Length: 216
Ligand SMILES: C[S@@+](CC[C@H](N)C(=O)[O-])C[C@H]1O[C@@H](n2cnc3c(N)ncnc32)[C@H](O)[C@@H]1O
Image 1 (cartoon, rainbow, N blue to C red):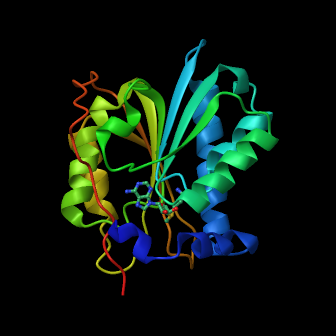
Image 2 (image 1 turned 90 degrees about the vertical axis):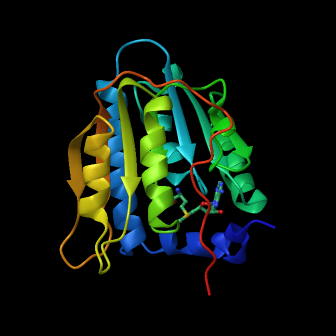
Image 3 (image 1 turned 180 degrees about the horizontal axis):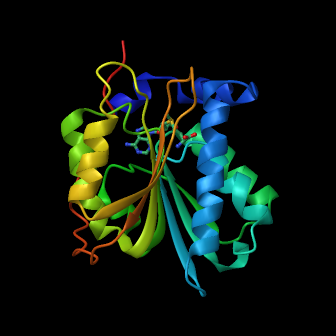
């Protein structure tokens, strides 16, 4: 069994029930940045992938009312079948035919086969759950998942030792320009927004990006 399933991720999503929780505040930033990224994307069909999508509250909270709704083909990849089922049901309720929810391992490049390079890549709720080497590997792997001009959204807590300066540097080294780094006074989250300025790298479906760390 995957280490990721040692934590009850279904329960973790209850944090969204409180509109004043850090999680809800973080989500608001992610949704705003996602909406901006879709608005700024070139005309025509758009591809979006979400790594470790959870219940998909970011994508499913933005797409229904977004002017680019009909242009977007999205793949949300979530390992926990119960959590994925929540996202799938919600997407169906919202008549989002372009949104596919895959129950699978987002840490494997093969999960994105056929839908990359993408215009928008969401990596939210990952970098606080994998080790440093895997964060670096994931960032180095993003040029193979991203179109030139693609937006990548990521999140990470800022608990000591704060790894976000290092993460932001790794994005710069991978040819991403930072267009946003959202934090709030007294809250520990951060939401990073990066735009890819490089050329798309070759896609290798055998690459492994990360694995969630076991929790005590
Ligand atoms: C911290 S939550 C973030 C969920 C969502 N991105 C959000 O921000 O609301 C992490 C999610 O990743 C899922 N997960 C853990 N390991 C995974 C893997 N290897 N592949 C896909 N999903 C995974 C968990 O089941 C959980 O739903």
